[in-house]
Image (tube, rainbow, N blue to C red):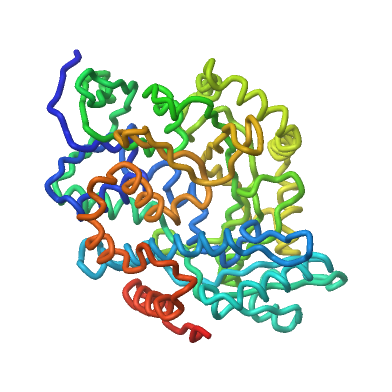
Length: 498
């Protein structure tokens, strides 16, 4: 039976970290707005935000080599790394604000201090890492980074990686102790618990099937619960934060901005260590270099994780292909996303990315032994029986027409908004959850420009660096690092900013 329900101010689709962050920001800015959330699964943070579907790296570009590129003259472009780091500082400040006001508690349940490292093999890669270290360590955001190519020093930093390693090729690593491991699943659940206490209307096991514009300018959603009952809800503003499921809903909205956009799903698998003795020998997130032809989200890394108050060790990700847009999605998701307005864009992407397609097919075909061989590039003496395979989250990379040509595959996070700001969707993948606060501030700026002047003082209270380029303010960087480390229970031993 279908019934029209009362109008609400804001509807958030998807109970992941993005909706949790946007809902929390809006509740601080306008406490009297009525917010409703629809999530098709049984609880919050079960898809992309879940701790087992997310690498948990507090992405601050401390260790991810794909955020720093080598220019033709041999110098290193760190501009993307600086942007990613600044975005993570926004998240750290907002989380600190919430903890300081007792809106969320026990930050150690979602964030832990953990060294971030980059490790490379081979003369050419060592030279690149050295140049990268010089470029980053001179920047005030990356103070405290160390570099070494001395095997004895590396043995102290990464004993598990160095044990039984034949030193017949050059090896080097950088290390910075101000990195973090973030349990975005736990954080998402905390934020939704807080939102519920603020009278946000949260409906689990409710899937949004359709979105259409009404004659009076509102958005009407067709929502079906797990008992098959259908209801219709209207709102002035809708945010589609359904991970890979955002694209089909955006397409149903019919807004011009949804045209000529496609999605390419990439699945991920991790190896998880089941031997506590091995887990105890490693304490860092160590990122390597992506193989030729691999997408940026497939950079290999060996990660210490803290999940359910237990230390874990994961290696991966191994890319895979599934036509599903969500881990719990349908095998027809990809096919269903092809529309008359984006079919040429999708075909162009297919033609351009044959090497990526070949790489994904190769990854899908890997045996456990072949995956173990890749792991042994990090842990030379890794034993098959100590590692199990874990199917991780599903990511959908954005395909769009850009200045670079038709059907360009985008590796990043992207906000798509209607011209009048009445509806917005989040598409894309990494760095994703780590930049949730800055991305949701972007949604607020694009969709509520008429309120920004009134809201700015409160935004600056929540995120003191809002609107300030940190690169020009080393004193502010130091202040933020010190205060967030103290509030969130992270190590406050940071190098003074030069």
